[in-house]
Length: 533
Ligand code: NAP
Image (cartoon, rainbow, N blue to C red):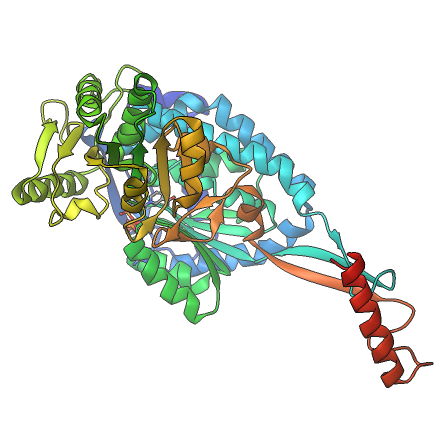
């Protein structure tokens, strides 16, 4: 099989491209005996940035996915036996490799997604953040924890965290590097092996991840990439995994939830959002506008936590709209492997069509375009202008549905109570942002129904606070990533308790009746004194 590449010279950075290509071939198909290597189906990848072929990858099916699971299951006990400290060393080395190969990673991510360099920088930073945090924390978090025993002194109790087994990961195209590995890092550290399916549009980044992990010392079969369609490979993952980590749309999340639930297998889902922002009358507009522009346009708006609706106090509405429109118009759009552009391309023709349809529907319903509202074929096939809509009526689909593009609407509100009600008024609850004087914002934040609330920032403050879990309320998700929760979800907590002296149900030298009185009295006393709290 040949790994064909038609990529710019820039990809010829270290590690050597031939070695890399060779590695991709072997790693992607490690353990896949059933793949017909002579005549595989293939997926052709076109770069939205270059608008030319980037290469192709062989497409696997359900049999190959099952084979990947068998291989991952076979090596999992050994990987667990290695111990968390040695696993952490490998992840720590991976962290260093991510930094030393950052230019290569950012090039590849930009080529596959069309995003601006800043978006690719976010991915590198996020992965490094996860690797550093979990490599440091996992040995502490996974240490057996002494717990209060059933009977003071006489019961010795420890909590252990066993790995689930083989974790299946399904990830989307919008952050192929970050979402291709960040959630797998705690799974690996907990002693699981991982079978990962990237989106079919962005497979090369996942193959580079596998390559870097291998260079860091990860044994074969511990992290395997399977590339194929969601309906086939994704379903096979749901049918074989011991835990599912899914990131993608709410619609797919619901399908997968049904599949894994039938097998009573746990899952974590990071899904869609329609994230609101509240701008109160005491917000500092000078600093807010730059941050809000970033929150709406990062990754060309193709970001689960980016802002798509803004509720502004009516007293500052006019001024705010003008300033934000000026800021949107000043953004530099373009596609190149450098830092000059602030807003990149959308990922595909399909994504451009979705954005155009949402805006056309809103306009038909009576919405007004304050700025943007048009594709930019002069810059590339899938470019779309940063867009602000006003007066969006109830009947417009984008009022509540996720656009996943550089489109935001602004609505005036009479006061912060109305803003909170509007912010909470959707089926989603992923992220919310509040621009206000800190005193106002900290009062509003607890009233928001979302997994993260960012004060005087769009989404980065919460996302980067990796010690604290994030995820979705309502239809935005199940379970959490980051923090201890992001590690423990990949484990089976196990209580080991040893009884010493005599059993809790009574010593031999006392009748059951007398023992019951002693026990009840002790329990009451324990509550009164606070000793048993
Ligand atoms: P999607 O259609 O759900 O696809 C995501 C992944 O699921 C892809 O790998 C896809 O594979 C696979 N898939 C599709 N159908 C499947 C099925 N029936 N069974 C199993 N797997 C299946 O999501 P998308 O629309 O491309 O991605 C954008 C969405 O993801 C947005 O809603 C965004 O908000 C959400 N997202 C959420 C987060 C978060 O952290 N909350 C982060 C990023 C994105 P193929 O495409 O290869 O078929």
